[in-house]
Image 1 (tube, rainbow, N blue to C red):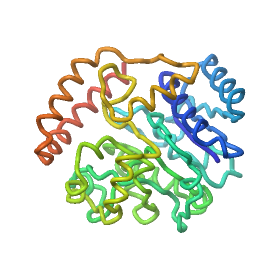
Image 2: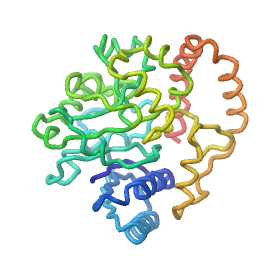
Image 3: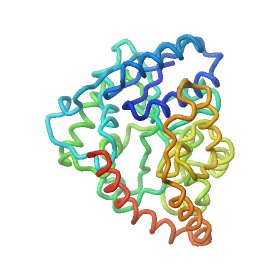
Length: 327
């Protein structure tokens, strides 16, 4: 089993917790190799990561240092508040071993709660990517990507058939789409993946990429927003009640003081097993989460109003995040 993350030095604690959660819940899998596409991870953290997962779990850790990401693209791009490291997802054929046939990519803000064997061995039906639907994307953005009547996928969990990726020249196809849009897509590589691979993505059960919107909105409401014929109500309830992969999307992240994420304890537990236990806990969020939780309580009976407010605020959040990254 090949697992891929992208990260920088600040995100090492979160990724170590995710890797630990995989090791703890997949002890029956004979071989798991971790590939870390990194930007400027310190020698100290590299050593700690390799030694910890090798000695405790007998798992190999390989680092792929990216240095200057812009050197892989012949055009200027604006990642719009996301760290540029996310673009490494487009370089799989260039950076991963050529003998590798399949890889599971996970965002650094994910935790695995159960065994991944069924996911990793799933029949992809000759599709290049398996991904979960992100149902709350607004219609205007879907229209701009020519996705009217089609699902929009979240790129935080991607099962990739690397044979097809290479055969179909998928990496260059996605990058060309990004270039055609002047490197200024709202969700950069995620939008590029969706816009350029409309017929080459198979739907993943949402239990493999659980977002907090699953307990903020009902199945009935989400079904109105997107093409939920791909996801049954029973699959939705399964994901809501017992997800296999939790994806801490948005600002409600378990390493921030004051948050009440439903699966906060999972992250804290796996982090506690690593050399980074209790590290990188972000202060200064208490007031934010008091306001956030109050908002959610008051607006719960009015899901459409909540949806419109949140979608209206997302661009503002991205501008703030973009300024922080530039600093």
